[in-house]
Length: 497
Image 1: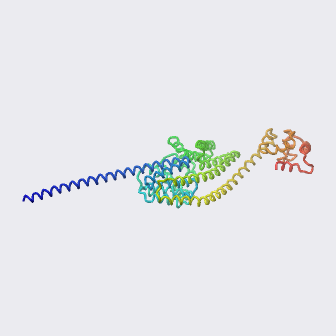
Image 2: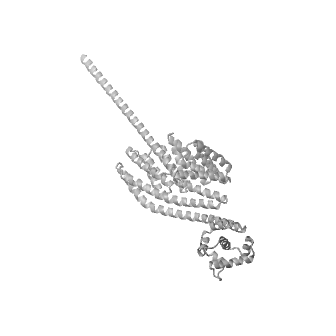
């Protein structure tokens, strides 16, 4: 009996020790799970901070037109993502690289970066990443005028954004998805659906830009009354909210276009000049927008029948077109090359990243030639089209100036010779080169012959007899050594050739 009691006592002690071990293990497991959970929470917060900082800074730099700074930023974050072993973070950097190449028209390189971004983001547990990817991809297709694919990607962006957490980034993206959808549908001619999208975006964002896009819709469908309402709202929001320079420029451009449409040339000129002021303030970083402002000013002055200013701004538009296409090609290729070379030198990259850099280098060499040819062909087409428009406007200006000069001659106006010199400066120089002693009255007479006025017309306009005109012609022949067998009108016509 005593032995049985000892056995029971030993078993109780052993059982108690087992329970203590179990409790200790449970506590350890709990602590481990707690630490694991805390670690995950900490990691999630770190990654969320990475995303927010990267995307906000990238957006600010892209809106400011500072593309080189944007690419340097993404190089920095690409290295940071590698150290964090944050694959989706690398994907966001590639996505930003794709986006900036799209905005510069460098579509071959953009497609390459989209492919890399897709591989790094496809397994991301963050649905916002996929929404951002498909939004940028939709913009890529819209630049290529492939509207069906743009709409398809836009729909996918909406699908993933609905599953994403309600973060500040998600809330910021949603109205822009609606705006982009509205643009794509407008291009397809689905105006009812397009308006619903713009209106929804404006309800969500209610910014100067979102109101401006609704105004642009109404401009597009020729409803000036409705346009005016949203132009006023965009103006109010621009004054009351923080609006980026590029979006303010776009609002002023839209305002100028609207006021020109409703024949309020004073307000149109004022708004378009404000857009030009922003261009100067930001050191001309918005060439893709400012060229449209120059074109709008050319149309404004053409409508006002001010051919000189219309011609001036059309030339500015052409210059900006050519300058921007050439500059952005050079800048983007240099910046992309910097991206490749800097990342290659980074010792923290994993070996599985090396094929990326090899492929990227090859793609640069392969696509650059194709891209250069595309740019050259595009520039040729633009140049030919704009040259025709410029020549037409130049002829219009010269015709109007000629009509003014002829009218001054008919009225025997004292300012005739001055205006004639402005129109034909080389003609007067050529006359004085032959005979520096010619008087103003003789120069005036020669100018009238250059305009092919007959002797009778000259006599009528200058209030002299026909015989006096004939005598003047004879004296001019002697003063300028014009041979007797040379027609005096032909002599003056060919003088400056």
